[in-house]
Length: 238
Ligand SMILES: [Zn+2]
Image 1 (cartoon, protein in one colour):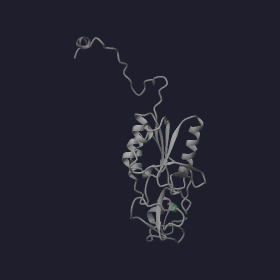
Image 2: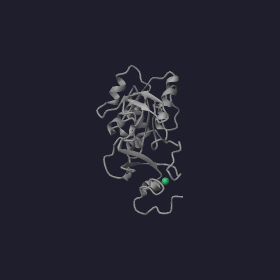
Image 3: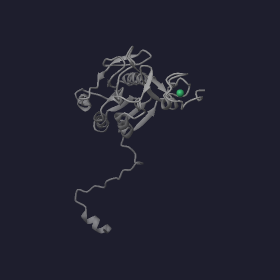
Image 4: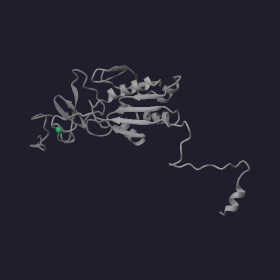
């Protein structure tokens, strides 16, 4: 199509449209809301950071909601292992997060603890809250389950989040290597089969979880001379 024809084809109301690209300046005042996912194994300080982040945003005069699911306290609370705690909204599978937020007068941000246990649909709702409603969403959770397989909600967060951060608070395996994966321990032995979500680690539950390095998660060895699956790891626990 020639340039002249294009000129003729313009409707009377035509206005030059400035093409925008990744390098175009943002209009003044505009700041896109963000979806961030912070992940790490147990004990790496996820809930502590979630509570700290809520505190920081509130101090800036922002209004937010704190959500959780299956918190270690067993109640609708975010509690951290170092003793902090805050009332929170329990995210049942049927809870529509968009409806939850729009039913409040004003929500600037969401703190979503234990987001690995949300439904995939709820992760989609978080993305809608960011894109359509301008709500900042800070999600925290495990990436993978006791088999080292990713939780569906965590996977969706990896796919959709603007930013994914591995929390770097040091958690060590018993061998001293960085702890990366959660093992499920039933009756003193590591198990690799069962439901994806079994809440343990809350007092004297028969199920508990232990953070291991990748090597010891793969071999199933839980400590010096403990819980060894086969002899694959012989001699390497320096
Ligand atoms: Zn180890």
